[in-house]
Image: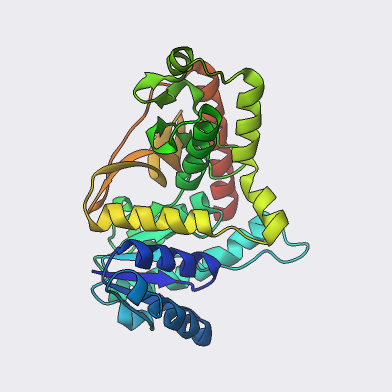
Length: 313
């Protein structure tokens, strides 16, 4: 199965590396305006194949995306000094207006997986451009809060001294400062969080919750301050999403895709738990939240909606 990656910077190349290590797909095509960078990354990745799984990795052009099952979009402009977020969004919107039609011209049946930030709005725009070409929004997916959810589970697992794969917890809403950590939904080994703590004589007090909330919400800022950018976490998230789609696993992931209504906010793209399979988004889940979480999710949805409306104006 062929996977296309538009953009061979840290995120795109790390996603490709994670796929090589896990044996996801059989061919990866890297497309970048900087052809030399794409060729260099493809060569480096190909040299890792003998230590992992059989796979073809090469640089290419849009025409080489023909028959791709999934194409990951990581390309985008970086923010310039003094540039507003809305100005950056405008530049990235114009980039996506060029990328999305070219991808779908050569790979009309592909699922689009958006990783470019701000991912909620870029996914909303990608879905709009794809719809103009007859592609339904169920085939346009953003990485959303998949990484934030992983951070939440990892930190809870560390706090509780339990393998984080047995921690079920979700981050909803914006992939950003207004995201919502849904503490009311946390289960560990099938038990609600408080029951698990009682059983194991562990504790997650209000102060612990505040610390974990801050560490999840501010993780990117901390990492960027220390090393300039984040790529291992999001690269692994993109590999996992790709695996779910290519192997038709029907998994539940917190991704973003256009939704008709979230907490009364119409036509908005933010993350909710989705059932995901070989054809993309199969169903959207709206879990039962407590009153504070409902309010926070509405605030997050409205924030993204306001930016979408500003961009359109």
